[in-house]
Image (tube, rainbow, N blue to C red; front, side):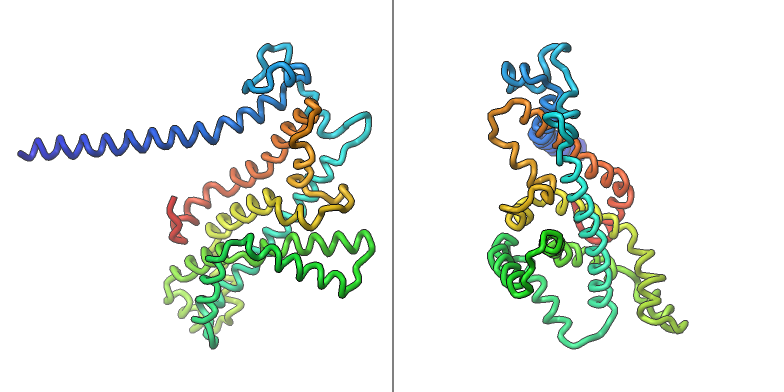
Length: 304
């Protein structure tokens, strides 16, 4: 009887593993095919793009080319704006990441370790606001952006784009999800550690700097990855703010929309090559943060 139960249990586990494997395989294929198509198309010649636009890779070795990667920098004999657009995305993303980590650390520490009136109401408001789809806040945010811009009478080119990028960065800083991740981590720190530091005469800021921040390294890495990816790939909000302006100030995601639906095969190749370049920063950040990211997922209660 025990053998039958054991055999049945083994069969059940085998079926569960098989189903999980099939699901993961299908999901992996769905995700990897567009990636392979992007990479393969970036190496196709203009003629290959016209004759075989639907193949993953060039159909012959003679049709492999790096001309579209050259077109990322130089187009029609002139230095293209693509590298500038990459830098625009990079500095705004790095600013968003740095400010987000700082704000989330301070807010989460205050919520967990400091006593102040209305803490419970504050947390309920954050959870309620988190449930609201972000797209709903787009119209009110744009109206507020326009009203403040008109009130300040911002007309100069440089001043205009400093103001625009401030508003591009702002939503990433005020995100609630990352703050809750940090809160969950701080909440998992044994209270004895904090009490011991206080008994030694450490101030709240000293505890935050010497205890909280060093212990939160894994969660910080997790937030860096989430924030960097979200900010780097952001399209709707920057496109709305940058519409109709000087294209020199575009982000890379906004710039790439100018290549979609075009009839020039070379432009499609350059768009794919640019997309490959645009993946590099995300890949680098993932490689840097991956080891700590697993620990961060475990300590914040996020499950994959």
